[in-house]
Image (cartoon, rainbow, N blue to C red; front, side, top):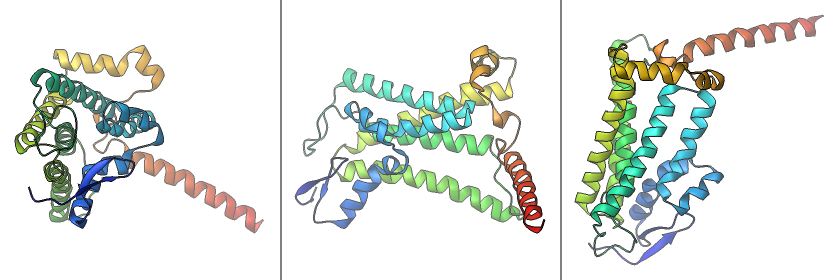
Length: 257
């Protein structure tokens, strides 16, 4: 591969071609989820694996929303990281000879992460989530396609960056994507799709227990998408708007008094 001298992207320590803006762009893209979602506390996870920078975003969402589906997605992501670690140490395939990175390279953990994240999220958006309608079915469908396409493009660019920046071979990346996608389908099917379609199955009973047990009740865990097609977003907004208007009207009366 004809890349020039490599340098380090500060804080993230991603090697890229210092003479190429395209290489710098891919260095940012390869860790774009970190830049979008990371928190200061996530620096502790970098000791283990930079990919674990993602996890604080899940933690924040889980604590804020208490949503079953987000907690399950988070748990599946952790399971994927554990699986990746096991596979790397079981297969022990080195990274490409031209790579300056250390450690085993099969499968690519970043590609696996994005494969899982994208697959799980698209399945959830397709099967369970209702986007706000524009009133035009063509525009609504186009918006859905745009969201799905953006998620897949994000995963593809991150995966490509791992090849371009010389961290993994093509096969290591493709296997990472495939394993992540398979894991995403498996977790979503057994934890959400099957329980929804077959509530009396063992998976349906397990989901009900997860949501209804005393600890979950105390933590106020909920399955918003089990009740509302949008997870309760519109209902919460209407409740907020009602209180907002009431507050504004009260303030207006005080001013005119």
